[in-house]
Length: 285
Image 1 (cartoon, rainbow, N blue to C red):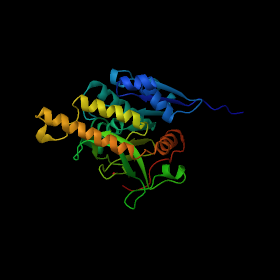
Image 2: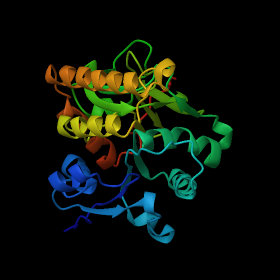
Image 3: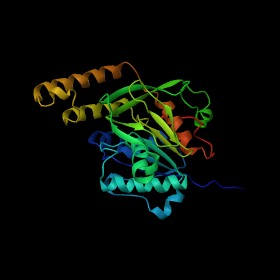
Image 4: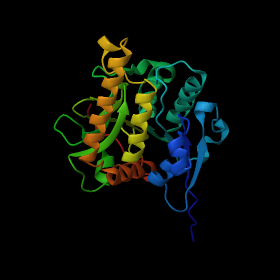
């Protein structure tokens, strides 16, 4: 009788745990495991933002890797970001499953192209439309989009799905060989895949609205959001605008819910389907 080997996954955490997430979930690791993990699997945490990385000699023992979001720029030159890009180069060469979320999505498409696969020419920069915070509708079924085999394995798939967003950077150009498989009204590259083994998602499939509420408050209180460039030196007006911005976002959150179950199913199907033809159709993000 054949005994199935325990599935093993690594979370590459690119952010430090917030006080809220530590209190409510005991850390981001548990947020991801609750969203993507299943009984009988082994999930391991590597705080790459603090220089913790998996042993390069043991990479083949993992079935997949997830890169979290981060407050850091995906195009930064911090040593840990460059190390992460080198790791991605290795995983890409090994055809290991890699799911990149927000920052992870941007690192996949930008740093992998500039540091790892420079010739691919992917590019990330500040979003032209400024911050995107809230719940956004991502279109996945459209005449201008390829239909990845991943969608076929999901069974019936909606033409669009709602997801939590919180970012000011975005992918401007995907690497050669990548396929854009999702977009929104505000962001042209909401989701892309490379071959059968890399999936990038701009939004946060792992977030519930409670985390976004807390994140919104922290962004406003830390002056991370400049609502108006013209008023960025006027602290009183800027503070009022930021609070109005936050209140508008929270009000919009009361009106709708993200399609969290769908996104969790999509990510699990990508990570755990071993068929080598899982991802891309032949078409161009």
